[in-house]
Image (cartoon, rainbow, N blue to C red; front, side, top):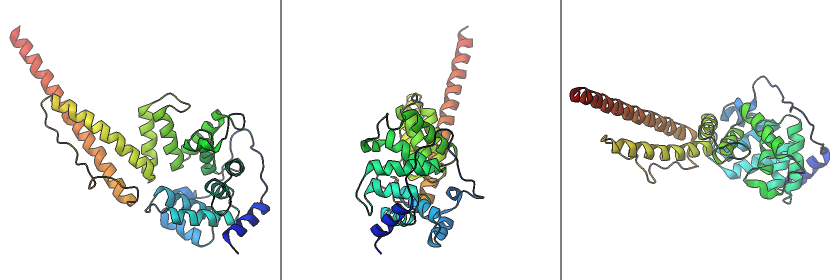
Length: 282
C-alpha cells in the first residue's frame, strides 16, 4: 500500500470537527514526549508510537538533538499521518506530502488537533494566521488573530520549542504585541535551551550585533576589545549538531558578560579618576 493510500484511509477514518471555544485541553502523560531526549523519541517512533513519529519529524526539521534532515522529517510526518495523527495530516496537506497541497484542509486538521490539546498544532494555527505562512489565506473572519496569539502563548508557556521561537519573533518585530527586545531574547533563549536551531541562530544574530555595540563603546573609552572571529569557521550552520551550537552559544554569552563587565570596570575607573581630579582642582 502506498503512503498516499494509507493517508487517504486515515483521512476517511477520522472526521474533521469544529474548534471548541475556551481554554484548550492538554493531555497529561507521565512524561511529555516533548521533554524526552532524541534517542528516546526515536525508539518510541520506531516501535510504532504515533505521537513519537510526529515529534521525531519536528526534531529532524528543527535540528533538535540531531542534524537537520528534511528527508527524515518528511518520512516521519508521513508515517504519523498514515496512522491518523491529525496534526501530521495537516502538515502533509500544507506541504503536499502524499496528497495535493490544500492549505484550507491543513488548517481544518490543525484546528481539530489543537482542540484535542495538541500543542504543536496550536503553533501551526498561529503560523497559518499570523506567521510567514499567512499566504495560506486564513483570514480574520475564519479565525481571530487574537485567538491565534493566545494559542501560541499557551503552547510556548508549556514548553514547545517552536512556539517559543515564534513568540520571540512576535516580540522582535511587533506582531500582535508591542516590540520588546528583552522579551524576544528571553523566548529565544528558552527555545535555544531546548535545542531549537532557529532560535539559536537568532540569538547568535543578536549577540553579533550586541558584541559590536559593546566593542565600539569600549574602544571609544580606550579599552582594547578584539573583534569576534567571523567567517565560515565561526559561522553556525543549520546542519551542525545541537551540542556544538549549544557550546558556542554558552561561550558567546559568557564572552558578552565578560566584555560588559570590563567596560563597566573601566567606566568606574574613569569616574573615580575624574572625581580625584575634581578634588585636586578644588
